[in-house]
Amino acid sequence: MSRAETKARSLLEKTGMDQIPVPVEKIAEGLGVKLRYEPFEGDISGMLFRDEQRTIIGVNSRESLARQRFTISHEIGHLLLHRGRPMFVEKHVHVNLRDSRSSTATNQEEIEANQFAAELLMPNSAVRREALKRLTKGVPSSGEEPGGTGGTSRAAPRCCGRSAWR
Ligand SMILES: [Zn+2]
Image (cartoon, rainbow, N blue to C red; front, top):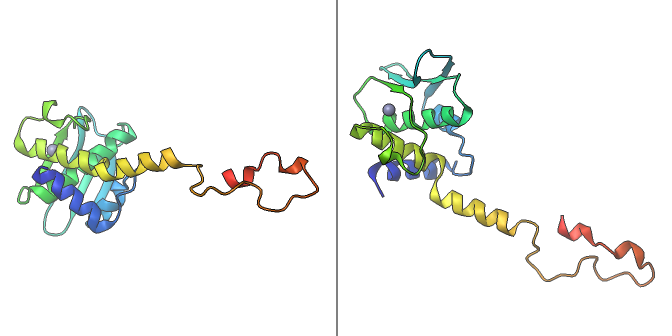
């Protein structure tokens, strides 16, 4: 696992917010970040600005929600991984969750921020847990008969036994 992925995972563990969809906005706020949604012109997806007093993540509100979430996660990555630089401006953060290397992210910091964002938005463990939950949903875990033990006289209402399957 890369440094960026490790960082994302430990942030999820620390905050306990590793349920899909991961509330990246809440995580940002928890880190003291102010989120600003603005309809940026051109090909700017977002930006990170920080000084001693504040940290601001600007998000292009014209872009899709999925993209906005990715931008926020990407900026959190810069925030935690790349200290020292006061400002990052993103020109079209590439939403390519599992293939950040082959996107046009050229420099190391951008690659790391993308890796971080991918792991933050789709943590492997949460993806597996969610899949298992869907798979087992509605399937009773015990071998109990629907309808219980009664039912000596009224046969008809017992037919479906839906209650046990809700
Ligand atoms: Zn970046």
